[in-house]
Length: 244
Image 1 (cartoon, rainbow, N blue to C red):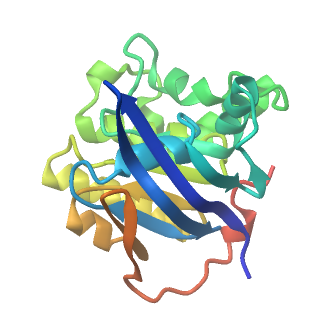
Image 2: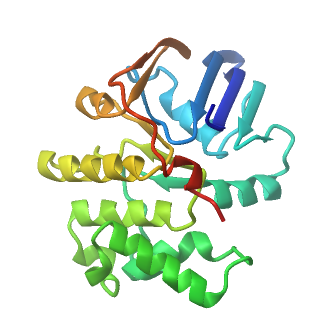
């Protein structure tokens, strides 16, 4: 059996506003194994964003247990959560979230700034490899404003890859792209998955969701469906992905 990267047991999240409690997530159980490509879909307000925030260690659950790469995250303090987020998770956002006054290579290098286990040479090599992986090495010295939307998202994917994380979280990665660039980005994510990466993608687009090997559907904060889209062979590279 392959290694479990994400394990959620009874995850619930409630918000209290004006003395009214709203339950965004209600007893969510979910496991994602190394090398899987899972999409999370559902209507607006179903809890997708809340779940993504918890998976990415940007938020905490009200109750339940979360294990990431075999480690319980529930009792970690803010500093420990930040360190785990930096080492174990790569993010791809709908709005790209590139820093405008940093070059492409500087944006990609950001997740490595706090990695004291890497030398300067190793960081430079990681950045070059990540940019080559998304075919953006020739744009390393450019700035985000000099790139198209599709190119910016490719840089964002390189930034997510550079730390060789256990998990890549993609939040509506094609939401700000036209159909052609959306197709290119999804092709890139599929290839990265084929190379062994573990991907979890939130999307409202059924076409993008269908490209994942497994689809989890949320409704009113609950998992209402968890199905395999296409039977795919295990990837030999999966166990090597993220090895330090």
